[in-house]
Each structure stands twice: as C-alpha cells, then as structure tokens.
Length: 269
Image 1 (cartoon, rainbow, N blue to C red):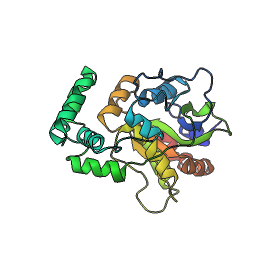
Image 2: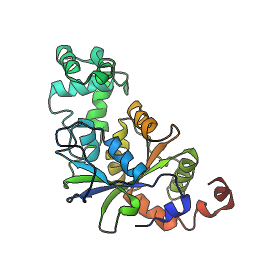
Image 3: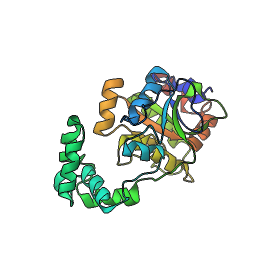
Image 4: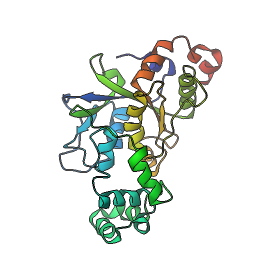
C-alpha cells in the first residue's frame, strides 16, 4: 500500500507495519525453531533491507520478545520466576530473594549476558518496583493469530491485519511526526514514553494504545538493548515512533492538509 504520510515525510527508512497473521509469506525471515534471537533484529531487517520478517510461538524463544509480540508471557507463572524477572529488571543478583536459583540462572546464560544478569538492567531501582511493573504496568496479550510479521509498509495490502506502523526516525523526522500526531489529539501529552524493554515499544505498548479511545504513538529504542541494535543497524541518532493502527488511519486522512504543507516544515524536511 501507499501512504500519504510517507509521501510527505519522505523518511530515510521505510516504515514497518506490525501485522498479525495466520499465514507466513514466502521467504519470510525468521529464527530457526529453538534458536534464541532478539525480535529487534527482525524489525531492523524489515526497516533497513525491505525484508518481511517475523515469528511465531515456536520461533520466538526470548520471554520478553514473546510477551512484546503478544504470544503471552510467563513472567509471573511462579514466585521464583517473578522474582527472577524482578531482579533482572532491577539490580540483578542483589535484588533477588531466591539468590541461589538466580545465581544458577546466571551460570546457564551465554557469557556475554552474564554481567547483565548479575548487575541487572536497572530499569527499576528496586525489585518491588519491577514486580509492580510486571504485574500492573506490562501490557499482556495472547493474540488469536499464529504469526506476527514485520512488513515494509509498501509490501502491505488492504487485507493485512495491521496493528501498528513503526517509523525509524532521526530528530527532524521525529519532531515532525510528534507535532503531526499532536495536531489530532486533545490535550498536550501526545506521546507515550514507556518504561520497559525496547521490544515492547514496537509491540505490546502499541497494541495497548490501539485499544484506548485516543491512542498515542509510542517512542522507543531508549534502552541499552535498543541502542545496541540501533548502533549495529542504524545510526546513533535513530529512534522509533510506533503509531497504533487507529491513529495511523486518522493521520493518513489528515496528511494532505497538515503541517507537511506549510513552508516552514517543507524547508526543514
């Protein structure tokens, strides 16, 4: 499909649609069953190389990635597992109540991750706050479809079940899109900047916004994991702005009579 937003913004990277699907297009890039991989790399393949990428419950093995895409989550299925993730998201080993079990987990992960598990991701200053985020702040989805696809927007069609559209943006493109999105909203708080892993900013948080009466775009790639992928695949000044499908449709209707057309923004863009 064509996009009026893309036509006017002319972004460096093509936007990527997040699509729920029960079929897998031919030549879709995905991880081998049972092999670990970060879903941010799947998104990057779509944004940078124009490839369709995605996965299923069988091919996405990272617990965070599964939860972010809507393949349910097991973060809190037991006290020990809840403690594990609360410690990981806060201060690591010293935050864990079940220290022996947590230390054993450190020894099972790949060597390059052991420091992260030992010291924690420091997304929260305490395990209690991390636990509250898991139980109350993390959007939870168990979608009815088999696959989640990252499709370059130009590869989509009207039959696709598009849930969100991810823009990989530099500061100028971000400024324009945030101003444009704010122009159709009430109030002054027009963007969600959620705490959490960067995979959630292009998945579950955008799903959650789509379910709200007035959805907001979600700013992402603000954590160490997202910045690591951005540094390898994009430039350091690249962020993501994920626009939930209902808001994207609204903005498409406004794109030809909006800030894109005023001389000051045409000069900047």
